[in-house]
Image 1 (cartoon, rainbow, N blue to C red):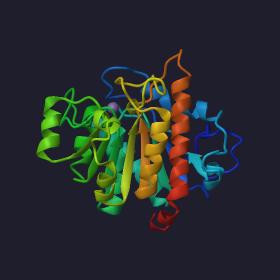
Image 2: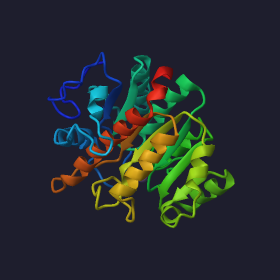
Image 3: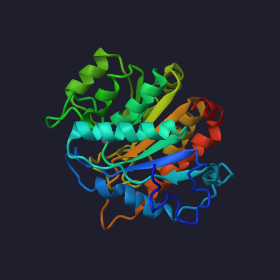
Length: 296
Ligand SMILES: [Mn+2]
């Protein structure tokens, strides 16, 4: 795989060396299936730019997570054909897994996650999915495409029945019926805030290993405003830190992605918050997930 000429955390990150890296960030600048807001194609570059201003040191974990080795691969090719794009993301994710490194995808719209998940599914056989998102993404198809961002969990559920959705605050009646009929584990934002959902139970029931797909529209607009399909009433920064720490502590997370960041000329905060979120996820993964590296 080719390295990107722009690296996560900037050119001063001396640990961004392919041979020793544990994590490979894979930019997927694809917005072929976005329906409302545009700008997700430029999001990986905006996130990489913003990441240059992050501190290497993590004052909560009291360590320098970048020392584990984080390299950024060159962006995937882009196809306007949705099925072809799914295949491209699958192949590139698979490449990283073949090198025994942990893929971290940066979108791009949410449709990329099913191609990534398929690579993990083919490697591990049985794998669960945690989706942090404002939306259910359970439509069989949307705007005539089965590879739409609004169908991504429907595609993933064709590979595993073990899914947990957190932060949902927008769904169609058909999606609600699917959730009920298939007895899916869904923690709506409403239930999360009021502690009406048994999250600890759900996490312990979910079999390891786990792929985590993170849609930035789960976040409140005070944290991430620029996103493809915004919904009010999301997670605050500290809430999300607690949730991510819980997930990475109690589950074996073997790969993850961050999708649906968008860009806007007036908003520097969203790419920076997304870059910091991604670094925190890598930090939690390497800090709490050490025992898992042997299985990759
Ligand atoms: Mn979403």
